[in-house]
Length: 75
Length: 221
Image (cartoon, rainbow over all chains, first blue to last red; front, side):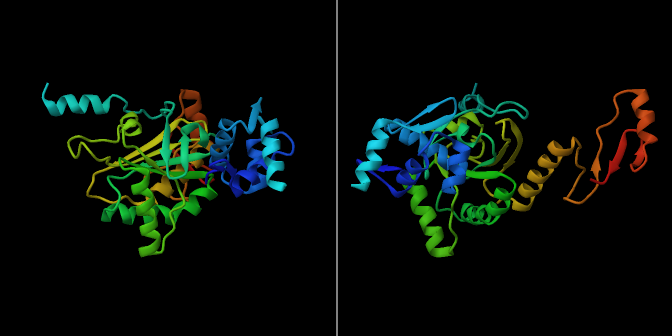
């Protein structure tokens, strides 16, 4: 399930970014969004590639671009 | 070297070995780009099939889908592979859903350049140079290759055996025991043979064991 189509977040992408309200490990994100762990990792990689998410010591967090993208959808 | 021998040598370069790290890869799949490392922390049954839209493979896909829930209860994921495109996989998976009513929920690698197939020795040039044989690789949560099964193009695999193999491997890991022929969960397990004379003496005098001889002892779990 892709997280981004064109320039827009898919529901999966949005759900994942929303789960990153605070920095989290991939296992925690899996529990929050109820997806298989390997799928979470695929999605995180896609979001990192798009510059929306970054990782430090195994904890994933929103970048400024990611935060703005989430807000964009709410507007 | 004949053409076939040369081809065999090339295709066999990456033959994996039990107990060694599973060869890492990144591949296009029906679920997007997947790396083997995405499965770290879970068991993985990686299997190949000869081709999409073929009858034996279709029966196998339906059968793999049938054991997926049981595998997931064992913290084990499933992933298929063939030398077909992602579009072919998508069309076939949709066809299985439409014609047979079975949803295929596991990713399928589109290994058009045979990269993963070569890494894992899935191509048997004596059978076919353009298709992968029916291979199964069991990879543990540390990404060590723990078991391999190879079946020819003509013979569909036995899902009960794949489940039994997973149960046996996990029992071995959890209890440091081995499992005898035709073992099923609930059956007695085998203790590793003692390595010293003292240990052998101790073994035959240990209560609760069923020993035919010092090297051949079983116990209930």
